[in-house]
Image 1 (tube, rainbow over the protein chains, first blue to last red):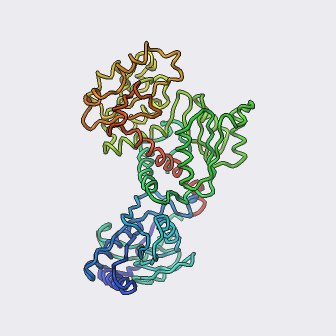
Image 2 (cartoon, helix red, strand yellow):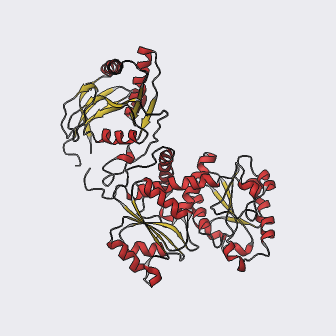
Image 3 (cartoon, one colour):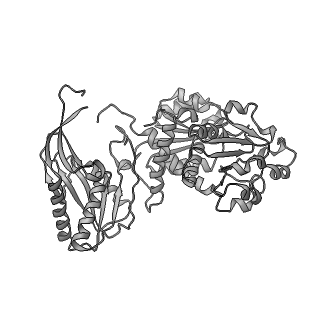
Length: 185
Length: 311
C-alpha cells in the first residue's frame, strides 16, 4: 500500500512547544515530579518519553525514571498478525505505588493503550496510570482517553497519522498520510 | 514470522528463523524475571504435550512455557494414553486433531514420528525429541546460551563430545551450528561415532586433548548409563579419562571457553563435579534459556495463524 503526505499537522517547533506544555501539565497535575515515572511504548513513544524526561529535568531539576514497553505479547490481534519485530521491554524501576505516565506518539483505537495498561499491571500496582500522547486522531474502539494531548487531529480511518522524531527519523514532524488512489488495496 | 509451520528438524528453519527465535526469546527472558511471570499472549490456545517416552525436564520446560503464555496445556504420557492400548500414532494424531489442538509437542522413541503426526493433523508440531534423530528446541536453547555467554555465534568452534551416534541432541546441534556459521567438531570413541561424519558436515577427532585448546564451547553429551550393559567402550573410568571434562582440560581451553551439557549429568563420567559446579559450566543457564526459547517457538508458530483474514 502506498501513501503520500496529505498535510503536515505539526512541525518541529510545534512538537517542541507541545512537549514542553505537556511536561508542565504533568508536573502541575501531579504536584511535582517526586512520584512520577515515564513508560514509553516502543518505538516512538519511548523516544518521546525520553524527551519528556529531559524537559522535566530542565523545568523542575528532577530526574524521572524512564522505561520502555513493547506490547507485542499483549496484543488482542495475535491471531491476525504477528509483530514483525519484538523489542525488549525494560522497566528499570518498581512501578508499585508510582504515578506512571504512559507515553505514545499517536492515540487511535485505544487497543495499544489497553495492552500497555495490562503489561504495566503485570509489573506491580501503580498508584495511577496517566496517558500522554503527541497526537490524538480519534476513532476510539475502547473507552480510553488521554490525560495529556499535544494536538487533536481529526482524521479519516483510511488515512494514516505518522509522527517523525529527530532521534529516529532525522526530523520532527507529524503528518497525515493518504492512500495513493489506484495503489494496491 | 517463521518460514515453517512446524519445528521438526533444524532443517525446517532458515538462519533468519533461528535469529528471529533467539531475538524473541530475549524478550521472553525478561518476562521470566518479573514478579508476575505470565503473559496473556496465547490465551485460548490449546497446546498438547504428547510425551510417549519418559521425560521430565523437557516436558516441564514446555509446560512452563505454555503456562507463562496463558495457553491451555494438556499432558499425554505414554502410561496414560491410548497408545498402551494399541492405538497407532496416526490414529492418536487424528484424535487430537478432532479435539482441535493448536500445537502438539511430541516426544517419541522412533525417529520420524513427529513428521508422521504432522501429516495426519492440522496443528503445528514441535519435535521434543524423536529417537536418535533430532531435538531442535534443545539446539536452539544451546545456541541461545552460547550467544548470551560469548556474545556471538559466527566463528565459534564447538566440540561435541561423547555418544554422537545415538544422540538426537547432536543430530540437531550439528546442523544448527553450521547454519549460524559456527564450526562443530565431533569428539568421541570411534565406536560411538556415526559411520559418516562428513555427511553431517563436521570433522571428527579421536580424543578430547587433540582439540581442547581450540574450543570456545565443550559440549559434553550424556553417557546413557541405563544402557550401560552394551556400552561400546571398555569402562566408564577409561571413558572419563579420555573423553571426560575435568579441571585440567578446562584450564587448557580458551580463557573465555564454556562447558555445556544437555542434562541430566553423570558427575564423574562425562563431566567432573568440580567443572560442573564452576562458573564456566553453563548447564543451568541452558535450562533457564529453555523456557524462553520454547516460549518464543510457541509464540512464533501460533501467532499470525489467520494471516490475511483482516488487518
